Length: 101
Image 1: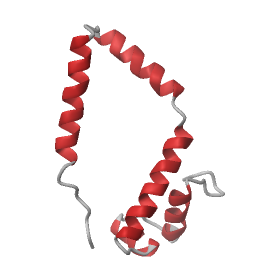
Image 2 (image 1 turned 90 degrees about the vertical axis):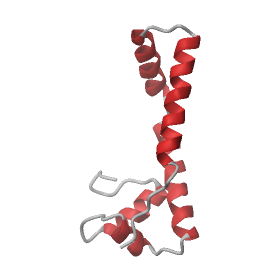
Image 3 (image 1 turned 180 degrees about the vertical axis):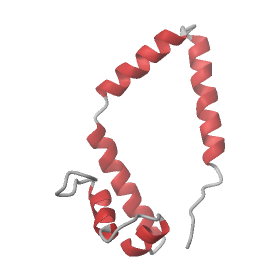
């Protein structure tokens, strides 16, 4: 079974954190103000847009690697007999009949 590990993930995360800290220091923001702004941004976010973008990215990466949905489900360790359907729902950013993703 293949596990996908991206070597740049940690570097990107650290660079992002450093950028955020730099912005906080430049604007001289108090921790409470930072938390307030993050909460406001989170509340205004259109989660459906992100779900669709994530689904498209998963499909594109799966196709680039010539993986079937079944192989993706196995590689991602998605449990259950509906694993292929779960992958299809993920790529389509839709919800299953029972209300779960």
